[in-house]
Image 1: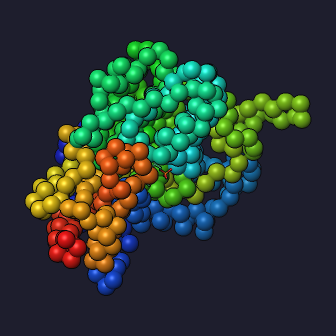
Image 2 (image 1 turned 90 degrees about the vertical axis):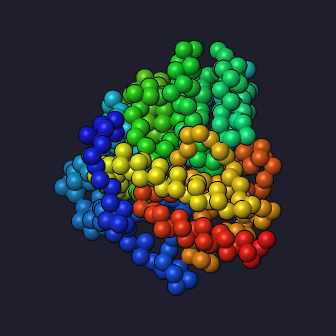
Image 3 (image 1 turned 135 degrees about the horizontal axis):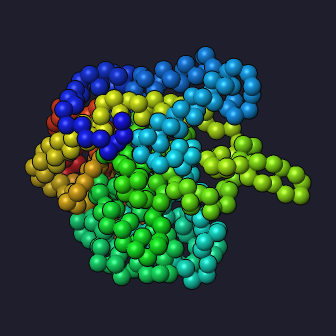
Length: 415
Ligand code: C6P
């Protein structure tokens, strides 16, 4: 089954999903935890935790190295996880899926290797005003090194990309477009199909930051025809320390290696080294073996729940939350895009987001406050940060009601 399969009859039973996440039974300050910081990292289901435990208790061993049984088992499980992830995003080849440490690491890999090979003085890299620092800073570093220019697609008040400005900025000088699929701060879902089609019309590759997309909606890299996709395991019910770079075979073959070391070589002499084939060329050193295998379990978990069913449930939940939050006097949303997913950002009157966050915390509600690693975006809105509630498949409408009640209490205390 791939992501693009339409599942119309899958029932989403949030109460039974919740039973899979032991941490949701935790009490914070004596009250049940309400976890609404899922854009930062999601909680992990038992299935993922058990995979980690099984690996370390039953077949912990290094991959691609030993002839002994345990090493073979570890290698098989590691490569099976790659296959699952390739199927999940519908990659044409398994070797287009590179295990990395996470989204940040994946984007740095592309910035350094693609950038080193293809950027020249005066070339441009096009990003957007709503990027996470992880999709700004690596490009700044390589642009500085290459005397290339970083250009930024502006956004409007609603937090949507100004596509007419994108059209003007997209010239043959641009050597790569790197944009987020879903904004972690605003929840905006960007028109990535249009961006990719327009960039490809000029033979410009596109990197999508999928950190806030893959856990919320079906994503098919062949259908999108995207050149690179970066995402993190820990935001999609998997462990921290593991992530994915998908890249089209053609680009990955053309790019030089990122890090040198074990596993990424074909043959080493002091005079010259030849490199391993894909995907190993980009996986130097002992990888996060348990993390990769457990990410495979997280993908199984999402597939079993059904990504379409998850999307449908989260859309219903977010629409419910918007309606309820909109009814709170003096609450204003930061970002009001027509197409949104995952996160809702807001401010209450003149109350500093940290103060709201602290009072919510004392009522056992975990939200994130601050700039969310999107400082340039916060500057555009002339705000120090936002309060952000971000959702996962295990959240409920009752939790949204609790959030609303807690915000009203915060208002009474602070306004
Ligand atoms: N955003 C948030 O609370 P890493 O840290 O490498 O797993 O992911 C970085 C990253 C890149 N792009 C986007 C769109 C992201 O949202 C993130 C992580 C978290 O919003 C932590 S700052």
